[in-house]
Length: 259
Image (cartoon, rainbow, N blue to C red; front, side, top):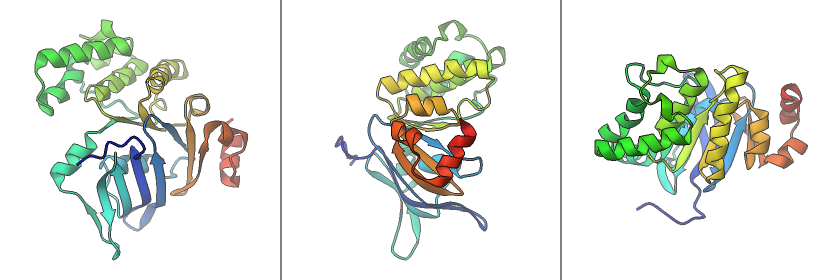
């Protein structure tokens, strides 16, 4: 049974190891995210940030460690080092608690904006069309794109596509939102509209784990900042504290380069 106690972490990763062949990408990463918390994950390119995010919703499988979502184990490793996932049906149910927004939008080009939002709730969740459309229209209003509901993605700007992608993820009513570099493919002038939508989600107490290079967002919106380098989570501190003093030389050098 799901554990609904409020002090149970929404995300709990302990000692997560991930290898691609002989290349160890994650070296025992541990991070816990509380209900309503916004955690920004920052660090150099190639440090394992995106891989870690993908391991949390089974887009990548881990080779060691423990992952639980809202107190429900997704993957565990026994004393002999054997990593096992729960049965496939349980994996799908647990991963449905998370919504994912990617760097490159991943919208269906042959569907309109509205159709992009209603496809998964109707097909995966089996919801009636009228209910799904009503929810989708509210979400498009939320991200400021009601007027684009009948447009195809090719007619949208990059910022508009990413806001549709956020609305599409929210249409599945997840408890947790995972963002993988949501603004890195955008021109600077389009970044602000996406970050504004994410700020509003944070104000509504949505639990969010955000891989980002946007230091302003990390400083102003995140409750905590987690710094990764070379496959390790080096430090995780309250945002204001981190930016005042990262507490680790590698994090300090990264900040000096970014700010």
